[in-house]
Image (cartoon, rainbow, N blue to C red; front, side):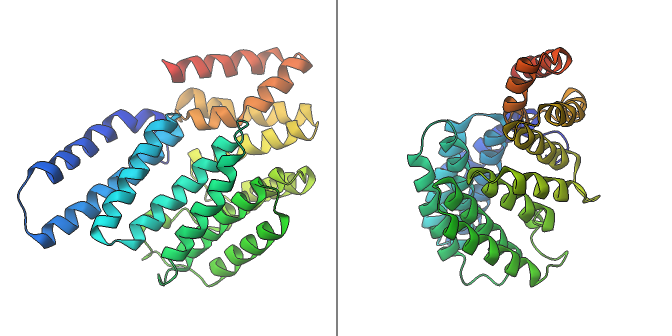
Length: 285
């Protein structure tokens, strides 16, 4: 998933989730086994939901997150519910960018509920991630104070430390990830200068996966485009395109580059436009 993006894995992962869902619905098992199966199926729903989100099928992503919440409720699994709500909050912020401001307010509510459910979990990384999700939700509704409070909490939680024994799904929560959330929040609040500096800072981390680096660099390019730095935006965008052309099939990364595509067209940067359009056609195919 870290290397090829959600688009390339969604179909296979969805088949596996349907198998687990049928097993849950049609098999006989003890109460304990049933709880474990509900948890596993719910965890799979969150994972496949993320692949759907990354692959651009937002309706399917929301359906899978809702399935995970239902299973978490039935199994009394607060950790699973918090994970699903955190993902739903992130999705709502993304969709709010498409002239749907009510979804940003929904993201604030979802992220707050996720943090509430996870309040007794001892893992700092989880609290850092959920606080960062709250931060960008507040920023998306223009609440600068709420953003500052939440992002400060995210950094404070991350400063408590982490270990390799933390759940695998949280291993991406490193300083660069919180920095990206802070940069997104600054972008939503209109502080492009601060956002650009934060994106640059995050890209200095040598340990980023290829997919995450591509996503961060695409967001950096978009911030440059929004700040009127078209030449820099196109240069950064061109650095992302080889990854999309070769190994990372992620419509989400392409979406992040849309502002660069618009700026490049206005500036007559034909090479970027042609290569972007070709990569977009390949992802759809």
